[in-house]
Amino acid sequence: MKHILMTLLCLSCMYGTAQSSGFDADVYLAKDKTMVGLGLSVIEGQVGIDLDLAFIYLNEGAERVGFPEDDSFVGNLLGIHLIYRVYKKGPAEGRLGTGFDYWALWGINGDEYKMGLPLFVEGRYTLAPGVTTHLQARGYLLASDGLGLGIDFDGEETSPILLTAGLGGAF
Amino acid sequence: MKAFLTTLSIFAFTACLPLTLDHAGAIDFTRYQTVYVQPVYGEGADILTGSDLGYQDYLAAELAEESGFSVITTDENLSHDCVLVVSFVLDATIDLSEGEEEYEAEASYTLRELGGKTILSGTVRDESSIGSSAIELALDEVVHAFLRPYRL
Image 1 (tube, rainbow over the protein chains, first blue to last red):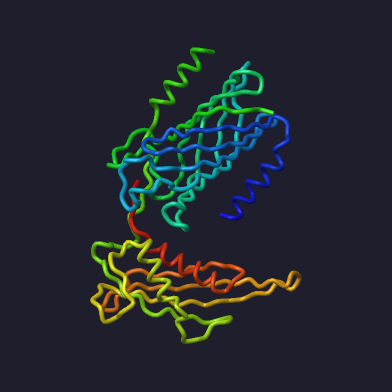
Image 2: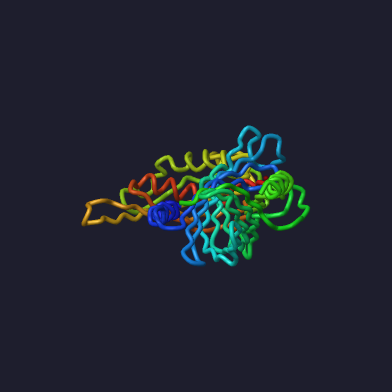
Protein backbone atom coordinates (compact mmCIF):
# COMPACT_ATOMS: atom_id res chain seq x y z
CA MET A 1 0.00 0.00 0.00
CA LYS A 2 2.83 2.36 0.90
CA HIS A 3 4.31 1.73 -2.55
CA ILE A 4 0.99 2.44 -4.29
CA LEU A 5 0.54 5.74 -2.45
CA MET A 6 4.12 6.76 -3.24
CA THR A 7 3.58 5.89 -6.90
CA LEU A 8 0.40 7.99 -7.01
CA LEU A 9 2.20 10.88 -5.36
CA CYS A 10 5.17 10.68 -7.72
CA LEU A 11 2.97 10.49 -10.78
CA SER A 12 0.96 13.46 -9.53
CA CYS A 13 4.15 15.46 -9.18
CA MET A 14 5.40 14.36 -12.59
CA TYR A 15 2.24 15.24 -14.41
CA GLY A 16 0.88 18.03 -12.32
CA THR A 17 2.28 20.74 -14.53
CA ALA A 18 2.12 18.92 -17.84
CA GLN A 19 -0.01 20.19 -20.64
CA SER A 20 -3.56 18.80 -20.82
CA SER A 21 -3.52 17.84 -17.15
CA GLY A 22 -6.76 17.94 -15.29
CA PHE A 23 -8.23 17.20 -11.89
CA ASP A 24 -11.69 15.73 -11.38
CA ALA A 25 -14.05 15.60 -8.46
CA ASP A 26 -15.87 12.28 -8.79
CA VAL A 27 -19.06 10.78 -7.43
CA TYR A 28 -19.39 7.03 -7.85
CA LEU A 29 -23.01 6.08 -8.34
CA ALA A 30 -23.23 3.02 -6.09
CA LYS A 31 -26.44 2.02 -4.36
CA ASP A 32 -26.35 2.13 -0.53
CA LYS A 33 -22.82 3.50 -0.57
CA THR A 34 -21.37 6.97 -0.76
CA MET A 35 -18.24 7.06 -2.86
CA VAL A 36 -16.52 10.34 -3.59
CA GLY A 37 -13.04 11.00 -4.78
CA LEU A 38 -10.52 12.82 -6.86
CA GLY A 39 -9.04 11.96 -10.20
CA LEU A 40 -6.04 13.18 -12.12
CA SER A 41 -5.73 12.59 -15.82
CA VAL A 42 -3.13 13.55 -18.36
CA ILE A 43 -3.43 13.04 -22.09
CA GLU A 44 -0.75 13.85 -24.59
CA GLY A 45 -2.08 13.28 -28.06
CA GLN A 46 -4.47 10.37 -27.75
CA VAL A 47 -2.89 8.36 -24.95
CA GLY A 48 -2.67 9.24 -21.31
CA ILE A 49 -2.76 8.17 -17.72
CA ASP A 50 -5.49 8.46 -15.13
CA LEU A 51 -5.25 8.18 -11.35
CA ASP A 52 -8.21 7.81 -9.01
CA LEU A 53 -8.57 8.01 -5.25
CA ALA A 54 -12.02 7.52 -3.76
CA PHE A 55 -13.40 7.21 -0.24
CA ILE A 56 -16.02 4.54 0.35
CA TYR A 57 -18.72 4.85 3.00
CA LEU A 58 -21.67 2.60 3.74
CA ASN A 59 -24.88 4.60 4.01
CA GLU A 60 -26.79 4.66 7.28
CA GLY A 61 -29.46 1.97 7.35
CA ALA A 62 -27.87 -0.01 4.51
CA GLU A 63 -28.03 -3.78 4.90
CA ARG A 64 -24.83 -5.29 6.26
CA VAL A 65 -23.37 -8.45 7.75
CA GLY A 66 -20.11 -8.48 9.68
CA PHE A 67 -19.80 -4.70 9.69
CA PRO A 68 -20.74 -2.61 12.74
CA GLU A 69 -24.05 -0.73 12.61
CA ASP A 70 -22.41 2.45 13.87
CA ASP A 71 -19.54 2.38 11.38
CA SER A 72 -19.65 3.83 7.90
CA PHE A 73 -16.08 4.08 6.57
CA VAL A 74 -15.30 1.07 4.41
CA GLY A 75 -12.04 2.06 2.75
CA ASN A 76 -10.51 3.56 -0.36
CA LEU A 77 -10.48 2.81 -4.04
CA LEU A 78 -7.14 3.48 -5.71
CA GLY A 79 -6.93 3.26 -9.46
CA ILE A 80 -4.22 3.70 -12.04
CA HIS A 81 -5.30 3.52 -15.65
CA LEU A 82 -4.10 3.95 -19.19
CA ILE A 83 -6.56 5.96 -21.23
CA TYR A 84 -7.05 6.33 -24.95
CA ARG A 85 -8.96 9.22 -26.50
CA VAL A 86 -11.14 7.70 -29.18
CA TYR A 87 -13.16 10.78 -30.06
CA LYS A 88 -12.83 14.52 -29.83
CA LYS A 89 -15.02 17.01 -31.59
CA GLY A 90 -15.61 20.48 -30.23
CA PRO A 91 -16.44 20.32 -26.53
CA ALA A 92 -17.14 16.58 -26.61
CA GLU A 93 -14.62 13.86 -25.97
CA GLY A 94 -14.74 10.07 -25.62
CA ARG A 95 -12.19 7.90 -23.84
CA LEU A 96 -11.49 4.23 -23.26
CA GLY A 97 -9.35 3.04 -20.41
CA THR A 98 -7.98 0.03 -18.59
CA GLY A 99 -5.55 -0.53 -15.73
CA PHE A 100 -5.65 -1.61 -12.11
CA ASP A 101 -8.07 -0.92 -9.27
CA TYR A 102 -7.13 -1.60 -5.65
CA TRP A 103 -9.95 -1.57 -3.12
CA ALA A 104 -8.23 -1.08 0.25
CA LEU A 105 -10.93 -2.05 2.75
CA TRP A 106 -9.27 -0.70 5.91
CA GLY A 107 -12.62 -0.06 7.50
CA ILE A 108 -13.22 -3.81 7.57
CA ASN A 109 -9.68 -4.98 8.37
CA GLY A 110 -6.26 -3.41 7.91
CA ASP A 111 -5.15 -6.24 5.63
CA GLU A 112 -8.37 -6.64 3.67
CA TYR A 113 -8.43 -5.68 0.01
CA LYS A 114 -9.90 -6.54 -3.36
CA MET A 115 -8.52 -5.94 -6.82
CA GLY A 116 -9.92 -5.52 -10.26
CA LEU A 117 -8.77 -5.15 -13.86
CA PRO A 118 -11.17 -2.51 -15.19
CA LEU A 119 -12.28 -1.55 -18.65
CA PHE A 120 -14.12 1.74 -18.88
CA VAL A 121 -15.66 4.16 -21.33
CA GLU A 122 -15.90 7.82 -20.52
CA GLY A 123 -17.67 10.75 -22.08
CA ARG A 124 -16.44 14.28 -21.36
CA TYR A 125 -17.93 17.61 -22.19
CA THR A 126 -16.31 21.02 -21.83
CA LEU A 127 -18.80 23.30 -20.14
CA ALA A 128 -16.59 26.39 -20.20
CA PRO A 129 -12.91 27.02 -20.80
CA GLY A 130 -11.08 24.91 -18.24
CA VAL A 131 -14.25 23.32 -16.82
CA THR A 132 -15.39 19.84 -17.81
CA THR A 133 -17.98 17.31 -16.78
CA HIS A 134 -17.82 13.60 -17.36
CA LEU A 135 -19.62 10.31 -17.04
CA GLN A 136 -17.77 7.02 -16.86
CA ALA A 137 -18.97 3.40 -16.98
CA ARG A 138 -16.54 0.86 -15.58
CA GLY A 139 -16.66 -2.93 -15.66
CA TYR A 140 -14.15 -5.53 -14.56
CA LEU A 141 -12.46 -7.98 -16.91
CA LEU A 142 -11.06 -9.73 -13.85
CA ALA A 143 -11.81 -9.10 -10.19
CA SER A 144 -11.29 -10.60 -6.76
CA ASP A 145 -13.97 -12.85 -5.35
CA GLY A 146 -16.51 -10.75 -3.53
CA LEU A 147 -16.11 -7.58 -5.57
CA GLY A 148 -19.62 -7.61 -6.96
CA LEU A 149 -20.43 -4.82 -9.39
CA GLY A 150 -24.12 -4.91 -10.20
CA ILE A 151 -24.88 -7.44 -7.44
CA ASP A 152 -27.18 -6.32 -4.67
CA PHE A 153 -27.17 -7.43 -1.04
CA ASP A 154 -29.61 -10.27 -1.75
CA GLY A 155 -27.56 -11.56 -4.66
CA GLU A 156 -29.76 -10.18 -7.44
CA GLU A 157 -27.65 -9.33 -10.46
CA THR A 158 -28.08 -6.30 -12.68
CA SER A 159 -25.62 -4.62 -15.04
CA PRO A 160 -22.08 -5.31 -13.77
CA ILE A 161 -20.88 -1.74 -14.07
CA LEU A 162 -19.91 1.12 -11.80
CA LEU A 163 -20.88 4.57 -13.00
CA THR A 164 -18.95 7.69 -12.09
CA ALA A 165 -19.96 11.29 -12.72
CA GLY A 166 -18.03 14.41 -11.97
CA LEU A 167 -16.74 17.85 -12.64
CA GLY A 168 -13.22 18.67 -13.61
CA GLY A 169 -10.77 21.47 -14.05
CA ALA A 170 -8.23 21.46 -16.85
CA PHE A 171 -4.98 23.35 -16.73
CA MET B 1 -25.88 22.68 -22.90
CA LYS B 2 -28.84 22.96 -20.53
CA ALA B 3 -30.34 19.78 -21.94
CA PHE B 4 -27.03 17.98 -21.50
CA LEU B 5 -26.70 19.05 -17.88
CA THR B 6 -30.32 18.18 -17.13
CA THR B 7 -29.88 14.75 -18.68
CA LEU B 8 -26.64 14.18 -16.78
CA SER B 9 -28.22 15.23 -13.48
CA ILE B 10 -31.25 12.98 -13.94
CA PHE B 11 -29.00 10.11 -14.94
CA ALA B 12 -26.70 10.63 -11.99
CA PHE B 13 -29.54 10.55 -9.46
CA THR B 14 -31.27 7.53 -10.96
CA ALA B 15 -28.36 5.43 -12.14
CA CYS B 16 -27.02 4.12 -8.83
CA LEU B 17 -26.29 0.46 -9.39
CA PRO B 18 -25.67 -2.06 -6.64
CA LEU B 19 -22.15 -2.81 -5.55
CA THR B 20 -21.55 -5.57 -3.03
CA LEU B 21 -18.37 -6.28 -1.11
CA ASP B 22 -18.42 -9.80 0.21
CA HIS B 23 -16.22 -12.26 2.07
CA ALA B 24 -17.52 -15.74 2.85
CA GLY B 25 -14.88 -16.61 5.45
CA ALA B 26 -11.98 -19.00 5.01
CA ILE B 27 -13.55 -21.69 7.20
CA ASP B 28 -17.03 -22.64 8.37
CA PHE B 29 -17.41 -20.47 11.47
CA THR B 30 -20.75 -22.08 12.27
CA ARG B 31 -18.94 -25.40 12.70
CA TYR B 32 -15.81 -24.03 14.37
CA GLN B 33 -17.06 -21.45 16.85
CA THR B 34 -14.68 -21.78 19.78
CA VAL B 35 -10.93 -21.76 19.31
CA TYR B 36 -8.12 -22.37 21.76
CA VAL B 37 -5.06 -20.26 20.91
CA GLN B 38 -1.86 -22.00 21.95
CA PRO B 39 1.11 -20.03 23.29
CA VAL B 40 2.90 -18.37 20.38
CA TYR B 41 6.56 -19.25 20.22
CA GLY B 42 9.18 -17.71 18.02
CA GLU B 43 12.82 -17.83 17.18
CA GLY B 44 15.36 -15.63 15.52
CA ALA B 45 16.77 -12.20 16.19
CA ASP B 46 16.23 -10.83 19.70
CA ILE B 47 13.81 -13.65 20.55
CA LEU B 48 13.99 -15.63 23.74
CA THR B 49 13.46 -19.09 22.31
CA GLY B 50 10.72 -20.96 24.13
CA SER B 51 9.07 -17.87 25.57
CA ASP B 52 5.64 -16.64 24.47
CA LEU B 53 6.40 -12.97 25.28
CA GLY B 54 2.71 -12.12 25.37
CA TYR B 55 1.98 -12.83 21.73
CA GLN B 56 -0.63 -15.45 22.66
CA ASP B 57 -2.69 -12.77 24.39
CA TYR B 58 -2.10 -10.33 21.52
CA LEU B 59 -3.26 -12.89 18.96
CA ALA B 60 -6.31 -13.87 21.03
CA ALA B 61 -7.31 -10.22 21.46
CA GLU B 62 -7.00 -9.51 17.74
CA LEU B 63 -8.93 -12.65 16.87
CA ALA B 64 -11.69 -11.61 19.27
CA GLU B 65 -11.97 -8.28 17.45
CA GLU B 66 -11.58 -9.33 13.82
CA SER B 67 -12.19 -13.05 13.33
CA GLY B 68 -15.31 -15.09 12.76
CA PHE B 69 -14.85 -17.20 15.89
CA SER B 70 -17.50 -16.66 18.54
CA VAL B 71 -15.25 -17.55 21.47
CA ILE B 72 -11.46 -17.31 21.69
CA THR B 73 -9.72 -18.79 24.68
CA THR B 74 -6.14 -19.08 25.85
CA ASP B 75 -7.15 -21.65 28.47
CA GLU B 76 -6.88 -25.15 27.05
CA ASN B 77 -9.06 -26.49 29.87
CA LEU B 78 -12.07 -24.61 28.56
CA SER B 79 -14.27 -26.33 25.98
CA HIS B 80 -13.23 -25.61 22.39
CA ASP B 81 -13.89 -26.87 18.85
CA CYS B 82 -10.43 -26.36 17.39
CA VAL B 83 -6.86 -25.34 18.19
CA LEU B 84 -4.82 -22.58 16.58
CA VAL B 85 -1.09 -23.21 16.56
CA VAL B 86 1.11 -20.27 15.55
CA SER B 87 4.88 -19.88 15.52
CA PHE B 88 7.14 -17.30 13.96
CA VAL B 89 10.68 -16.65 12.84
CA LEU B 90 12.13 -13.16 13.07
CA ASP B 91 14.98 -12.18 10.76
CA ALA B 92 16.95 -8.98 11.11
CA THR B 93 18.96 -7.29 8.39
CA ILE B 94 21.12 -4.23 8.80
CA ASP B 95 21.50 -1.60 6.12
CA LEU B 96 25.18 -0.80 6.60
CA SER B 97 25.00 2.37 4.51
CA GLU B 98 22.35 3.90 6.76
CA GLY B 99 22.91 1.85 9.89
CA GLU B 100 19.21 0.93 10.08
CA GLU B 101 17.81 -2.43 11.08
CA GLU B 102 14.93 -4.03 9.20
CA TYR B 103 13.03 -6.97 10.62
CA GLU B 104 10.98 -9.54 8.77
CA ALA B 105 8.67 -11.84 10.70
CA GLU B 106 7.33 -15.01 9.13
CA ALA B 107 4.42 -16.59 10.96
CA SER B 108 3.16 -20.10 10.30
CA TYR B 109 -0.31 -21.06 11.45
CA THR B 110 -2.33 -24.23 11.59
CA LEU B 111 -5.93 -24.56 12.73
CA ARG B 112 -6.63 -28.11 13.82
CA GLU B 113 -9.64 -30.10 14.86
CA LEU B 114 -9.40 -31.71 18.28
CA GLY B 115 -8.63 -35.00 16.54
CA GLY B 116 -5.61 -33.42 14.87
CA LYS B 117 -6.99 -32.96 11.34
CA THR B 118 -5.82 -29.71 9.76
CA ILE B 119 -8.63 -27.31 8.92
CA LEU B 120 -6.54 -24.46 7.53
CA SER B 121 -2.85 -23.68 7.47
CA GLY B 122 -0.56 -21.14 5.91
CA THR B 123 2.44 -18.88 6.18
CA VAL B 124 2.43 -15.09 6.21
CA ARG B 125 5.11 -12.48 6.62
CA ASP B 126 5.49 -8.80 7.29
CA GLU B 127 8.28 -6.39 8.04
CA SER B 128 9.08 -3.36 10.13
CA SER B 129 12.04 -1.42 11.46
CA ILE B 130 11.05 -2.63 14.94
CA GLY B 131 11.21 -6.34 15.70
CA SER B 132 8.11 -6.52 17.91
CA SER B 133 6.11 -4.55 15.32
CA ALA B 134 7.12 -6.97 12.57
CA ILE B 135 5.89 -9.86 14.73
CA GLU B 136 2.59 -8.13 15.50
CA LEU B 137 2.08 -7.27 11.84
CA ALA B 138 2.67 -10.90 10.88
CA LEU B 139 0.21 -12.01 13.57
CA ASP B 140 -2.29 -9.48 12.17
CA GLU B 141 -1.96 -11.31 8.86
CA VAL B 142 -2.74 -14.57 10.66
CA VAL B 143 -5.86 -12.92 12.06
CA HIS B 144 -6.75 -11.74 8.56
CA ALA B 145 -6.72 -15.37 7.42
CA PHE B 146 -9.62 -15.94 9.84
CA LEU B 147 -11.44 -12.69 9.06
CA ARG B 148 -15.12 -12.78 9.93
CA PRO B 149 -17.50 -13.16 6.98
CA TYR B 150 -18.93 -9.83 5.80
CA ARG B 151 -21.31 -8.58 3.19
CA LEU B 152 -22.16 -4.95 2.53
